[in-house]
Image 1: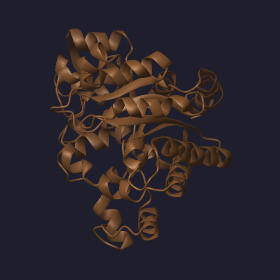
Image 2 (image 1 turned 30 degrees about the vertical axis):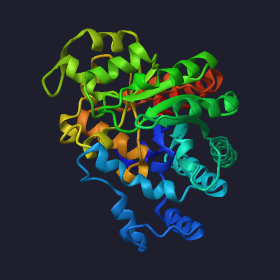
Image 3 (image 1 turned 180 degrees about the vertical axis):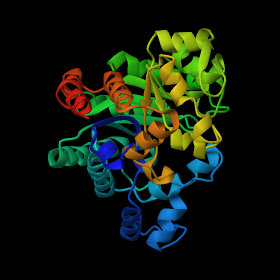
Image 4 (image 1 turned 180 degrees about the horizontal axis):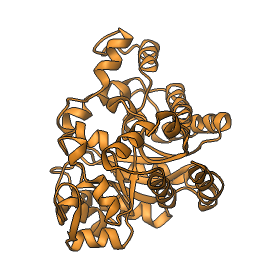
Length: 350
């Protein structure tokens, strides 16, 4: 499928980490501004190549690169810039709707509060929206291996209705079950924040079950290990277990990130990734970038990879885009307008 055609198609994105999508030049410039001297290189081309974690082989190794991006995002101005550039870059790649997640606790090393970090992020999003028209919303993320998840929810609550739409748990799955953070999940549910938890990326089916049954997650970040509860022959699914049936029949969206899954070792290559089989078996599958810097991808790249690997048509990509918008946590009038006035007309035209 022609790349220029794919780039022009309107896209929606539910799983993209703010601190995983910086421009390499921005990392360098912000490092100089804040006095951070820990970068692996000062050469722009070498730095860009270093950040792409194509051979990381594990989630833990993949996550190591974030210490550098987080280190340069410790002032409100830096956060605003990163958020603005994220929106502009996504819009240039054809994205019309995006929910971008970030951990406000990670941005407090130099005196910012969690609330300062959230406000600066939303300011950057607003500037990008004013310039490009992209609809941008924030997901406040806590880390599984830390203990401040309730504080993250408390910091996010004042911004409900102002751009923050959901709560997330990220970080290493193994050994850090989602229900360790049940008080935070319940607090988020009580005030109306959406809940989307990383699960079934690097850990087994129990991680998905805990996120859904115990924590009330409405979407699953990654969730590709759900294929382990199916009869999957490497290309098609012929049967479902109880958990997989629940995920499919209850229309629980999976935030699938093909390139990232390969780089972290969840699957050896695209051909053996279950995205195509899950989509054709009736699961709510969405396509996402995860970390545009560390994975070296944009949404056009993910569209192209999915289309080429799983023989998806433009109509298939249109259905996935509409499913993505229906699964979003942003205001329904915004998402419905994008479906009716932007997505359907564009895909029908192609």
